[in-house]
Image 1 (cartoon, rainbow, N blue to C red):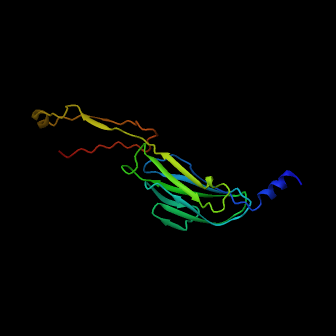
Image 2 (image 1 turned 90 degrees about the horizontal axis):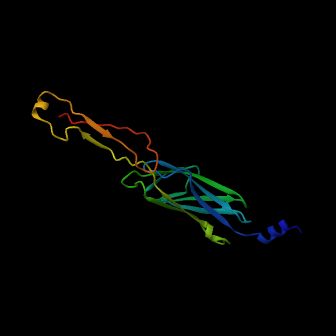
Image 3 (image 1 turned 120 degrees about the vertical axis):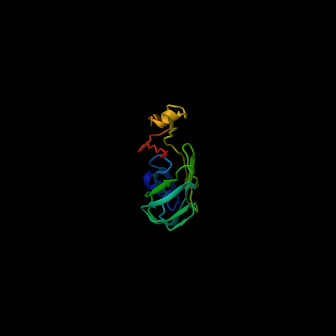
Length: 189
């Protein structure tokens, strides 16, 4: 008897699942993130009819997944895995929308949790996966100043003198600023 067949016999009938929640891109306020939820059968028995649960941070909105959830209740999303053979993996691709400020701001930490039940699992510590992400994004302390410092003489007003403004934009955040538009609207007065 070779060592491989001995190991297979030794582990026959063993239940061992693993779940991993991964983010493919950074958490950015107001943007969609792509997550991967991996369910692995590392044991020697076939996984059947198991519920996989994702509890997302309340500052995130579930958009869609390539496997249809069986239930969505508040921040909890559940999928049913009907069959997963030994040493195989199923992946659920998930789109999650990060809420915009002030609900989610640059620098806030998001925490989400995925789990699969641990009934009969010989190594249950890997049946929970926690995903923590610090949201990142551009921070733009914009300002506008007029060259007269807010004082306009009646004479300058009467002759229709121009007002000159300086508009400043900068990014002091921890990520790239996307689709920057600087727009200034003056009152008709």
